[in-house]
Length: 232
Image (cartoon, rainbow, N blue to C red; front, side):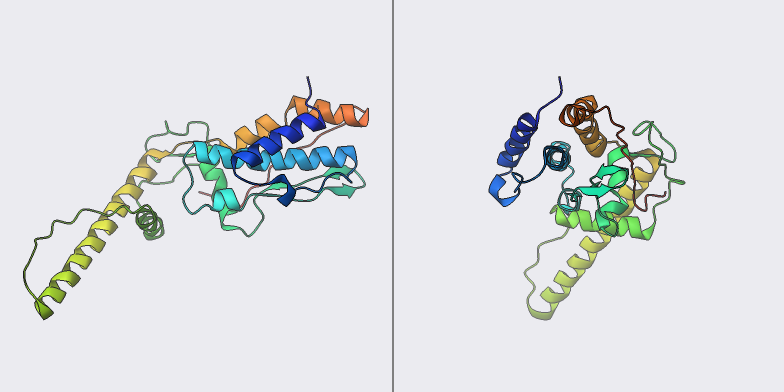
């Protein structure tokens, strides 16, 4: 049975409440026609489900995948109504969202993402990837363990010891980042489906039936996928 406007609105409000967001800060829907309102609510529901899927998958790092996703306004065209949901062109998240969503096959081992259209071409890490991983380790508060000895030296000798320790830790982190990058390129990245699952649970047969109920028409619904610079 298709969900009504009221049911999907309650679902959206429940998801908002789980994030501590007041509906008064988000929606002013009462003046919208029923179909427009349903599209806006469905788009909001989709965005919230994407964010929930990311939290459940523990894929929150910089937060861009969660914060950059957005829903546009309902556009009226000659062919019908449309609403855009997803990552805007130009956003950093748009460049890697689908890798996290669909995963990436390893250059050697394909088992982590067997159905992914993406794959690493070789197992050799590059500087850019290692740098991003080193930044990730720092954001997580993870440091490569460097064996350092305690010293009672003071003054210049102590400063030199500190600088030496910092250099050792930086080199260790660099080595760790390159080793992690090599392992990822060899074995690949696991699929999370955070985006696809939200599409399937939001823009499904119930959604289509609800649109038909509102309009009283059997209509054509086209969901077009557009991704950013996701070439591997």
